[in-house]
Image (cartoon, rainbow, N blue to C red; front, side, top):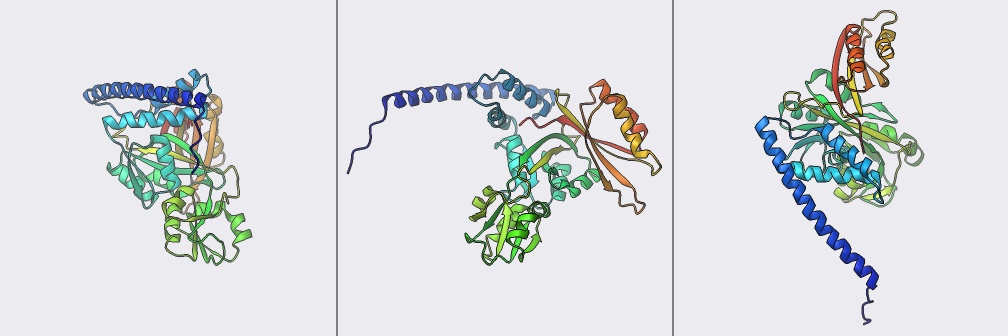
Amino acid sequence: MSAPAAINPELLALRERIDAVDCELLALLNRRAGLALAVGEIKKREGSAVFRPEREAQVIDGLKAANSGPLHNDSVAPIWREIMSACRSLESPMRVAYLGPAGTFSEEAALGYFGSSIVRVPCGSLDEVFRLTSAGAADFGVVPIENSTEGGVARALDLFLHTPLFIVGETSLFVRHNLLRKRDSTDGIQAVLAHPQALAQCHDWLSAHLPGAERRPVSSNAEGARLASLDASLAGIASTRAGSEFGLHVVARAIQDDPNNRTRFVIVAHPAQHPAPKASGHDCTSLVVSVTNKPGAVHDLLVPLKNHGVSMSRFESRPARSGQWEYYFYIDVEGHPDDARVAAALAELRAACAFFKVLGSYPVDVH
């Protein structure tokens, strides 16, 4: 039996220095945690919120500006989100609802935004996410709102009309869809299970490679993976994380039609439980409005924004389901009502609308 190779002395010395730095980091993190606890005590006395998304966005922005490398700025946000999550949990563990089960992109978005030191509340439907968050059974909900390929998530948009929840933050994910199965082969697949949006996002690949397989919509991609783990004739479309969760083979990777496929998620809360975020310097304000059905009505929606120099980043319509060919318009504008220009534009816009609701003003994705 050969003797183990000797460790390079230079490598050994570097490892020892890394170990020493890790100990320093741990001591600093504990100091930070102690300060966070002191902040928490003040917040308790004042009755203020534990989680302030605009404050966390400002912290990350400041760190990125101060960063001199070699650590990339893209790595700063996820590292500090985990640090802030761990410190925040010392004050009060947050319950976060999202479309489950384990392994969904919604769960990934929740962990990416809040960090892993949360109480996870997986839900069977978007309706349940809204219901639990509205009832106070969850502090926050994480909801997919639009996809770069398929556009708005219709059910989520409709639910905003009928619940008190408002948006306090956003995050987005590059979505990589994978074909998952108990067997490491595409032979004999009778049905492919996934959320309807995922099936649509993989339409071309499925048509080319599995033209005879049924496309069966289910409540979430992870639910499709779970069901595929029970039946070798089925396959699911989901993340590699869902594949690991349910012991499935990744039969084909990245089968989405758009290589830049991205989904945007919003963070929702009840206004009675959490204050509206203040301006962070890079904010979005989301609205839903309707207008009287008359010539030029939609044009009139845009005039106040133009007059006050406010940029619109999203404009989408949904049927009002009144039977009168009326529509709700979902609008995102850049900026926060704390900005006088934005406040003036919104005031004029409200006057032109038959229905007007601010869904939230919040920091944009800083990942």
